[in-house]
Length: 320
Ligand code: PEP
Ligand code: MG
View 1: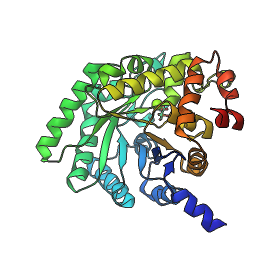
View 2: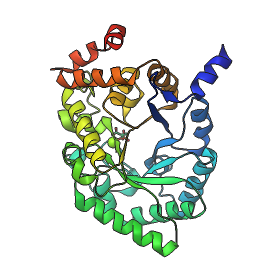
View 3: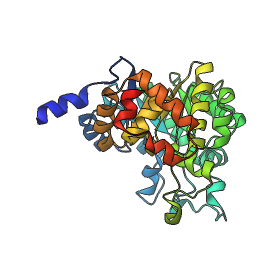
């Protein structure tokens, strides 16, 4: 039985009618890659690099980062690696950076906003990544908390300058969609980003105006709220217009039912905690893509998150 399970996990997430999703793992350290692969990951869809800063009380040097990104790519043996540039602020505070205190850190200088103000953090990281790419590492970079075109253009310019200084190859530069502004304007942002990765944790927080850490509101902070699903649809539509691929790396991607809805909404890749991969793959492999598309259309028309959740019935899957 164990062997059959292991075989199942290594199968692609292909629906019964032949539609395949790419399955990545959210993994932060090279030593976690083997476990992710054993669970059926086909690559890393989200490497949260803030952990390199959080876990050690000091800023890792360019050389240290380079060694880690290289080791990560090596452990993946040619499978894709999406590295997220440093995402500090909001719930991710790094004490040793001594950033100014803010009254509303979730609405403050976080993610890309911080990177664009702190070349001392951004540039060593980009150099480390491009050096790894120059060595043959298969990786792409994505930027967190993007809300506008100028942010992408400025980040792309910095990347291009560093790439040419290092004579490194071009790599895909993507953005996270985790703010409603980015989802609504996805068709425009897609002109300037090579791919999108939807962060449903923050997208839910900012769409519903619910602090993702507030225990009192945890039950209401539901990523299946139809408003969130509509923003995901807008993101996919915007990406399609420009031929970009769309992943989801927030928590919804790792829920079996959420994953089927995301597939039905047209997402190309799902990246999740390694332990969630087997159940998500099994669920997708038991589904028909045509049915999932109908399921997604019904979810978009629901009035409440509870109604969307009620679509999670075997009957609903079978009837279509
Ligand atoms: C998200 O916001 O959904 C996401 C993947 O990023 P993080 O959870 O690290 O903020
Ligand atoms: Mg986020």
